[in-house]
Image (cartoon, rainbow, N blue to C red; front, side):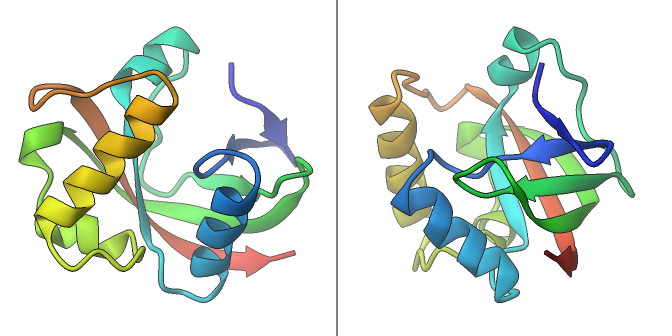
Length: 132
């Protein structure tokens, strides 16, 4: 089960450390309005999918809430089906869908979860509600 903070499910972007700091800074700057997760993580953690209108506590490296985001869209897609619109909304500076795929493939392989073209993903869109 994922952590709960201030009565909300938590959203922890990337891995703790510099990656999380960079991704959170993009959210706080309004440049990152999407993220992508592995459906298998929801199953492993026995978590239901987020839903439109749900508010999540965006956590920093110390586990404290740095912002509240509201989910605006939830889509299921395979790794190979993720659209450029979603990838670009992640705001991480990818210049193409191929670049996005290479970066995400590398990230997931780096944490021990290699992905294939048919790996199921959860694509979330969100908006920043408040920063702490």
